View (tube, rainbow, N blue to C red):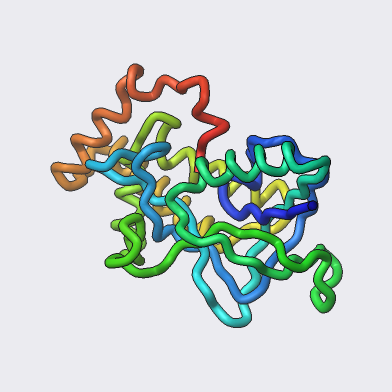
Length: 219
């Protein structure tokens, strides 16, 4: 048995498990959106972070990294158990075709696993849904959890996509909006009362202390 998993969020820069092969490429008919709540890594139940999931969108492509795990059942089971813990806020494992850079017609690998989430607030308690860009930016700028600030997740994703040579305009736009929020705060502009309280808490050195397992368990 050999399996491949496609990473489009933090897996792009931090797989966190032993892999035998990494390939940069893309999947078709999906786009990245920040519509999923994270309440245990980059946020809390009281102030959820926004992390990315995939939205079906015909004609779109989503760039990222595919990881291959081979070497026997024990290694493969360990990797999958790790991924299921890490990606616990995603309620589906979808099988997709993965395309390597330079060949958009013929899949490099078929049946690649990708963690996705149901876009429905009733059946999926982690689904936040879309929101105005300014509101999303304010939420991301002020959310934090055991793994650190929500804004760091976004900025690390922006950098990771730049590093693989396939930036995402949506991620860039959202990251720039978060920078505007942070710039406004430095100039004394006001957020909502709740966001101000969350930002004040997120700047506490105790709250920002990275736990030993934080990097490995980021989602």
